[in-house]
Amino acid sequence: MKSSKVEICFIGNAIVDILSKISDETLHKLRVPKGSMQLVDEELSEKILKNIKNPKIISGGSAANTAVGFQSFGGKCSFMGQIGNDKFGDLFSKELNNSGVFFQDQDWQLSEKTSKSIVLVTPDAERSMNTFLGASVMFNINSVNEELITNSDMIYVEGYLFDQNDAKEAIYHCFKLAKSNNIKIAFSLSDLFCVDRHRKEFLHLIHNYVNVIFANESEIKSLYKLNLRESLNKIKNNVETGAITLGSKGSLVFENKIEHYIDPVHVEELVDTTGAGDLFASGFLYGFTNKYSIEKCGLLGNKSASEIIKYVGARPKISLKSFLN
Image (cartoon, rainbow, N blue to C red):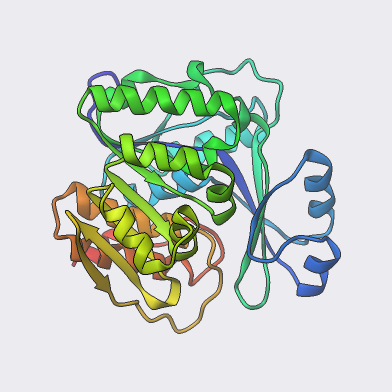
């Protein structure tokens, strides 16, 4: 990897996804807020696992999902995150490298278990995420491989990392290193509740470091505590390039304050919305790193997001290169 240049270094929580279909009744019984991402302890994660049947287990994590999608388009990338020294950590590392994304854990001396995200999918295709952070909360300065950053044209960071202080310090280090080396910085707001928890810090980061922003409608409105139009005007004054996903309504993309609406891609049967935002970012970033028009970037984002919601899970089952034809 020493002399190997990549387009993007993705930085985020290294999580194993455990996906299962579940009834609304069981979701209610477990007291899981529908459609949200909540942090759970090991005890609650074990309780949820006992109430699901035939789960699908794959390596996941928001930024890692985006990295795999980016690679599926033909992009070259690496990933930085912290796993535990257990069978789930082995699974995460092997699956990510087998997908073509370079990943090498920095520290195997952890006693913590690898992080898990138990994704419960109800019949209406809504997903409720229950995340046991585990080893991910140990991401710190020592987890950072500076060479991966300096050998990249861009870094992409997920907002979820800001849920613990050591990771926060590490991310500031990554941002400063990238900025001092003229490496572009992309940032995803990740989740509505994540924005609520870190609004002030996110605003500071956006104003001082971020070149490319990703958010959905509820996240951007929460960030500024304004309506969508006012929030868009604010973010366009602070960031050069960005994309706001609008679910079934498509997306809004902008570059140098010029905004474009991108029509949605129709999907016959919606199965699972897990990873839709992650895969949107994959398509958008592939277009962006290949100097496509901002409208084409948005269209590639919509196409890849519409593909991932056709089946359970957040990793593409087809080569996303097919959308380039």
